[in-house]
Amino acid sequence: MSFLETRGLEVSYGGIRAVKGIDLTVKEGELVCLIGANGAGKTTTLKSLCGMLPPSRGEILYEGTSVTGRPSYELVRRGISLVPEGRGIFGRLTLEENLKIGAYARRDHAAIRADMDRLYDLFPRLAERRTQQAGTLSGGEQQMLAIGRALMSRPRLLLLDEPSMGLAPMLVQKIFEIIKRIAEEGMTLLLVEQNARLALEVSHRGYVMESGNIVLADSAQALLRDTKVQECYLGG
Ligand code: ATP
Image 1 (cartoon, helix red, strand yellow):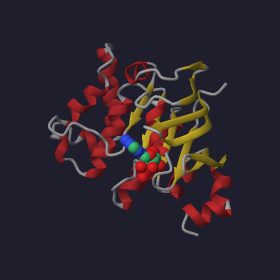
Image 2: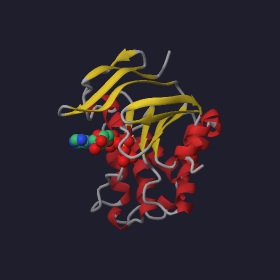
Image 3: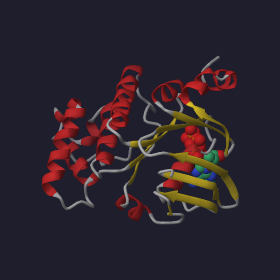
Image 4: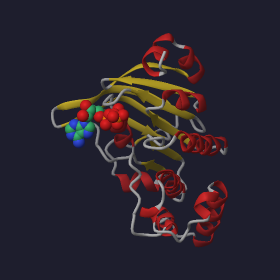
């Protein structure tokens, strides 16, 4: 059984179909990436999976049951968490206040504290800055905070939208190391990335999206060797 599955998922803006009937699956514990050019429909797909955009057709199955059209707050409670493109942190609150917001639906205060400590182990950079106003963190620190905040909801499925966006190469490496580590600890992840090479290097499997359709689906290793993928997405 797939942990997450879409069947003929179609998402439209007004009359315009941005996602045109895609089938994708993510198994429990897998790290799967969705790559493709600008405007291919990757972000739209993620928004639909977390309940921000209702599908115009097709089905979304999560843990074997349909969650098609369910609202975001319900999906968060059921364990689906999105780290949005552009991060969406609260700039006027401190770093730690932002992390607490990630845990807003939880009542297990001792466990929240323990999770926060574990998170500071994973991101020592955040630990040093817990009282800093989040808006004054660097781009890379804000991205770490956004991932950390999503983890504070104790997700079972983490959806990451362009985590490398706007970051210097060294920080991109750092973020990908963290993603890899989160995956190795057993999290199920669906990763949307412009940086196809890095995404495929950390993923188990990948999907290539073009103009709202999935045009290739394979193991990450096979996609890295694919001549079309190399030409179009890996710079030849
Ligand atoms: P990028 O890598 O540039 O973020 P993407 O693959 O994530 O691209 P989407 O953001 O999903 O692509 O966009 C898919 C298509 O839907 C694009 O043609 C885009 O212009 C269109 N689109 C996205 N959001 C809206 C919206 N709110 N209203 C109308 N059209 C939209």
